[in-house]
Image (cartoon, rainbow, N blue to C red; front, top):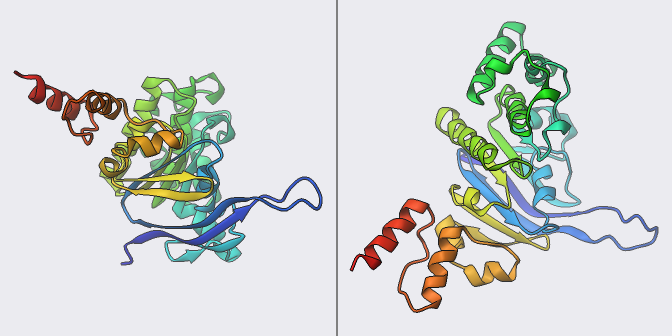
Length: 284
């Protein structure tokens, strides 16, 4: 089996300018990226960096102006493959209200598999499993508009999971949520990977979320400017600062200590790792 889930080669994209005769401005410029099956990749960047535009190319919501995007061996420009691409790559957006289409939770979760022609008994099983995975099974008969923002987002995620996609792209899914809601979404991502080996691509501006990924891709002005494991990327504090991006609070603390002459490593991303570093250094 090909171990590549998504392959992007020299991707260029621009929106047509509103002013007639104006030259188009590239939103993505020569982006190349390969994502392995089963991996967890976080994509970071300031507003306007192109990260959400990139996300929308991954299941053919947008098509390249130049270059190619290949999803599980399928070229997104091939219109005959669009439905299959969207079946295999699910999208979760920032605002769950944009994804909820029914007046009852379980009907909303069933919507996508019904449109894919999944048999009714299989739909029932998928809906129940998806709602249990996101902790919303007891709300299956509720009206979505009466739920909290975090609960709505979990229902939106369940609707994607019921399609049984091989890859899920989360486009800033926690941006409108409180800390508890953000934790819930990240826990769901962990379950997805552990149970199904799902490929996960997370567009986020929360550095603590990105630190949990296998790989971090940083974008600026439509280009990839950093790409590596979290511990490789987040130690580049000054470069990230220049891009207007924060680093996890643990790294910022260690960086500040280093600036004041304390010899501590910057690679302790988690709170536990940071605590261990500090305890070891200051135990005397």
